[in-house]
Length: 173
Image 1 (cartoon, rainbow, N blue to C red):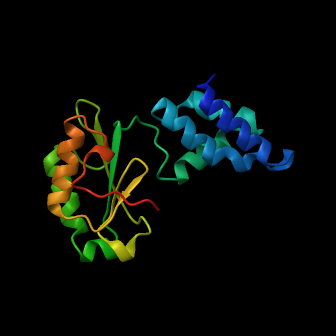
Image 2: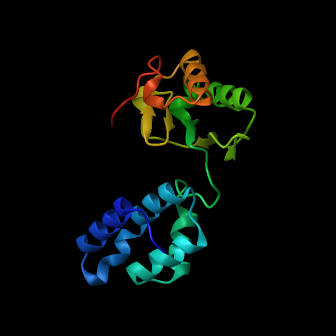
């Protein structure tokens, strides 16, 4: 299996970073970048990473099953995650979740018919001081209001990139 030159370079960097007996430490970042390129964690990706780091495909599959940010099914171009853990819940996270479900017409780990947006309810983003929080792909948004969420979803549905939607300020962690 081959990847884009950028992904191959990342894989090589990860594999060079660890001694021979610790190559398995590269499994998670390799899965994340492979998933980004392929759209999901496929059996072929699992087998390729297992071969490159010197573990069994079952060991890689166990990692995929443990981490919620790894997906076996393709996600939307824009993967929207809404936190509903206690801090976010207390300041409107559950309402934002319901609003997103209603507006998009999809539920947990589902994708819009056009494949543009997927939605996931998550437990915690580590942003309790800035709740309620949402994440779109790798971009974080804190103190999100219902109006901001509507603008963000409308913009994504219209084909805008998250950074083009000025009404919703992005937070750089």
